[in-house]
Image 1 (cartoon, helix red, strand yellow):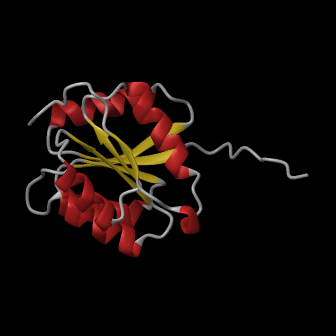
Image 2 (tube, helix red, strand yellow):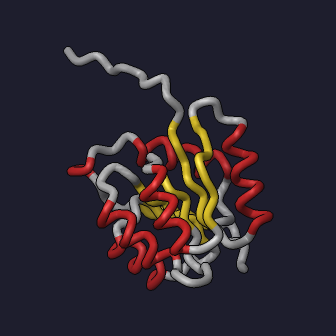
Length: 149
């Protein structure tokens, strides 16, 4: 019989989104979760890669459309170099092509910015617990309208 041991350390989350208001709202939401801690915010993909490399968070919440380096390329760089860091794409894009590009880049999950907050929190918790050999893309594309940028 195996016993599950709860890790008392909070999940470390990096937010990568070029819209300050959205990123701040997400940060404030996560601040109310005792099992999560925002360790940094990036406003473009290049900054997301640099911060992820330095901070090594459990999860990066990544927008797709960002300046300098887009979220798909940043996701690929992070998943190729940081084995234990998971990337959850959180985007206003709901088209299949973008979801497939995120899958190919190694995203652990793809969420619409129009999804419920509880869904974001649930997915962050779920993907942070995945061992590397079990990584697969989860696709959550709810019927709710996305917040387009």
